[in-house]
Amino acid sequence: MGKIQLKSVTKAFGGVKVIPNLDLDIEDGEFVVFVGPSGCGKSTLLRLIAGLEDMTSGTILIDGKDATNLPPAQRRLAMVFQSYALYPHMSVRKNIAFPLMMAKMDKAEMNRRVENAAKILNLADYIDRRPGQLSGGQRQRVAIGRAIVREPAAFLFDEPLSNLDAALRVGMRLEISELHQRLKTTMIYVTHDQVEAMTMADKIVVLRAGNIEQVGSPLELYSRPRNTFVAGFIGSPKMNLMSGAHARQHDAATVGVRPEHMDLSTSDGLWRGEVKVAEHLGSDTFLHVDSKDHEEPLTVRANGEFQVKAGDVVYMTPQADKMHRFDDKGLAIG
Amino acid sequence: MATQHSQKLARSMMAPSVIALLIWMAVPLAMTLYYSTLGYSLYNPISTPFVGIENYTYFLTDPTFIAALTNTMVLVVGVLVITIGGGILLALLLDQDIYGVNIVRLLVIAPFFVMPTVAALVWKNMMMNPVYGVIGQSMSAIGLAPIDWMTDVPLLSIILIVAWQWLPFATLILLTSLQSLSSDQKEAAEMDGAGALSIFWYITLPHMSRAITVVILIQTIFLLSIFAEILVTTNGGPGAQSTNITYLVYQQAISFGDIGAASAGGIVAVILANIVAIFLIKAIGKNLDA
Ligand SMILES: Nc1ncnc2c1ncn2[C@@H]1O[C@H](COP(=O)(O)OP(=O)(O)O)[C@@H](O)[C@H]1O
Ligand SMILES: [Mg+2]
Image 1 (tube, helix red, strand yellow):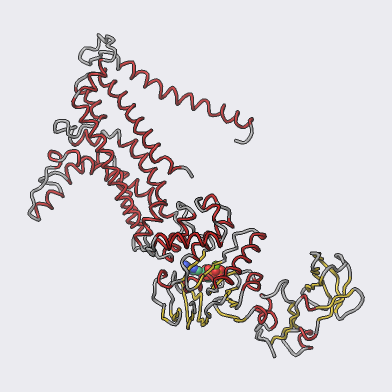
Image 2: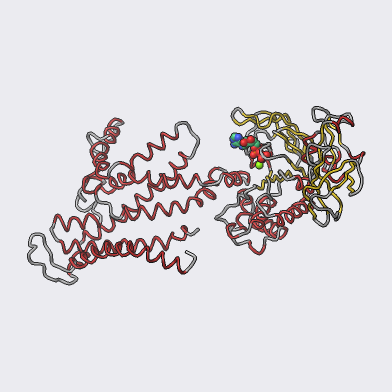
């Protein structure tokens, strides 16, 4: 079981309100991702849930029971730190067994769980090494191993992949998702990377300056962003946001259209522009286009290869049903 | 030092200082070795006949030698135990975010700036004097018989004085080590269910092991040659109760005027120091590897 509820949670450091007022329900077994720009309070929120920081006010319920004043160890949550926070003088085996040792678990059960974790995470080959002798990805696995042996009510991850190189990150992302499939335990995962959020989450919580901007499934956030911030944050490359005349045509203060929702042509279309940069990825082509009709350069995505180079003229037509409209407060209309 | 060229350059640049160091060490050592084979008394410095190893047999079979050897070891170990134990406690205290911790830190460091002779005299006359001393007066005030520290427990007195002087050093080194412990590790342990004591035992103490090793190695070198504190407080007495090897060598040379025996004692002390050093490096030196 791992249902976590936050009610009117606030957190201030000194006089600075990092989390002004926040309510959130996390269902048992859910994979929830907190995403937002750096410094928006993601780690702080996670540490409040973990009990590593005291709340300024509000309550937190874990499985329906008030955990506001429980020390971290009694919340049955396991955390994987960005720095891994392994114990450097202990072997991998001892690191993983540490929480069990603290719980005074008997030797046989302890060994069984450590072996099991080592098997799940492919740690067996270096189980007797020290963390200092491991690569970043291996350390990450050990940190996860240390979390899963406790069989916690929920896992907390704080940007666990940000210290890994790109290739490894994709691999670990998959492994963590598979782990969630296998364990079906609640996971709360913090990241500033919206790709991680989109690929892993059952539910994404978009944060800005300590406030929740929107909560929803990845596709909900993608297709119905509640405001311009979420619209710009979710999706890669970013949504094109346009104000002024284009917006007025649609009775809105701002309209947005995603790069993949524009039809490209070299002969005719609504907007004419000159290609500034063309990124040919093979599977996709990203064009950054300067258009006289627009203040900001537009980003357009074509499926597969689209044969243009910098300086060429292209025409773009937004797909009418994929336009997003926002009012003067930045909130979505309709 | 990647290339052969830079290695050669480095070697030639270092050569002068290495040679100077060698001469600086070798000459006194050779002189001491030379004197240790002579029958050289300050009362009759004209005749200095060669006596072979007689000075060594004399020094080593002197019953005071065994006493001095034991005292030296007790002194070193006693001071190490107090300074490391106390240093860890103080470091843990000074690592806290308590009010006025900066002033306390300054106060803790203060004894290090007091010269050994001054410190020893202050302790002897103002703290440990059974009649006027602070300790004696306090004990009298609560109705206990005051201790005559320098007469009744001379070695313990010296251990306490020296420990007081070295406590700041140990505290400082251990404190810097403590401050380099990442809070993530402590928090991870906290989430893993470790209480304050377990965190100290399983996380903090292993983290400090390297600093503790440094303190042991450095302090041992200095503690083997404690001298000033003994000279100004007990003069090695009563009897030889607070005489260590260094003080015994001094006695041979100055009190008994026997330069030969003193030189032999000096050589014995050098050998002893090396044995201790090798032992220490073997026993705890592995902590220094990264
Ligand atoms: N211990 C602290 N003391 C004071 N300010 C803090 C502390 N921890 C975080 N903050 C501030 O709170 C804000 C949110 O930080 P954090 O939760 O780490 O952001 P994120 O993880 O989203 O990048 C930042 O402005 C940061 O400076
Ligand atoms: Mg963070």
